Length: 535
Image (cartoon, rainbow, N blue to C red; front, side, top):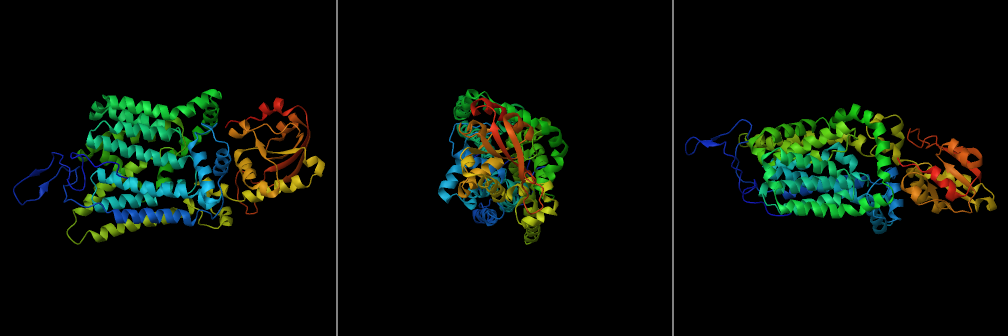
């Protein structure tokens, strides 16, 4: 993903970086290097064919399992949100719902079509990570290993399986890191304009980019790159980022900042997130890649060869620690690991280059096989490769809970439709459908029309803004709501069914109650505020 030719002073394939720590003893002798600095190497061409092949395989793997289970709850929500275009939503900016809507239009509203964008996102992470490694000084072997590391990282395999806000967050975060590296390599302040544009677009996908931007700013401030902050181009870049972020901010302000309620609800899990945070970083990247990114962390902070890019290294460390302190979910700083994996492959590649002629192939092959093996081991956790029924016995949900959330949505909607159809015709005409959370509401919105269900309503997040139900509806078939709330608003509430997914998988909907509520006590316009749930 080269967006401009490197500056002559930047390390690249045609001009090895001169760091000033190498001294030539006499003509024809080997160079003596500082222990922390890889020895200079002959120029290499970028192995684009190998990188492209790895990216294509990663894309193909994601697409091969794209429709194996079903939609995850967030995807169902985004499909519904995409039918209500807006500059913002209660719990996320507008980019992901827009991507969901465009994918549905382009692909005939199929699950496989929805998953094309995230699969392309994984391919992009492969190319971005490899490109970062080249900028850091990696030779051909190092660049191939960096591409392979991104392609076999369990966190990226899992995140790029579903179209959620994490998809653009990781991709735009990695692009931002690469653009900052371009700025540091070239010392050309005009790169701030591209960085500001990327950060602004990223903010319209997920607010997480603000933490990365703040961490990178600290990285510049505490290193010798602080001189790059004294330029009008940085100010212009900030203005561009603010202008691109403004539509969502204006929407939030106009609707009373509902995202603050969502953040407060998320903070209730902060303690749990901190308890599992560091072990999750190892599990998400895998035991094979953990030594690589840890080595990249040490090398990028200590090596003289990496001094030029120290602000990025510092920023990545800060954003990882910051998310821990704030109690964020362990995958929030995922984009930072593209840089750390790329950095770890630099000394690894140089070590391979220092092997005697003919001895490089075997170590490189073993390392590649180890990465592939690590990726294969993580597949049952990251992707739906096991039979859905096996989730009942396999503990993979304890690491990747979304796998269980991809099953049996049509079955849930069929239960709701059965109870709705059981009502007398006259009563059906005055009965709406209510859902307790946006996953249930999104499923009914997706599959309900084919079963003759009316539009679904919910108080959860943005669904609440799309209500209330029609004034003529005085009854409701309700799934997944608290009976206490229903009894406050309806004269009669009766349990008519429970949903079981038929696979024995314990997910959020397993055992969900289905109620028939009749005799609405007040007009929907008066009671609808009681149903609001921003969480």
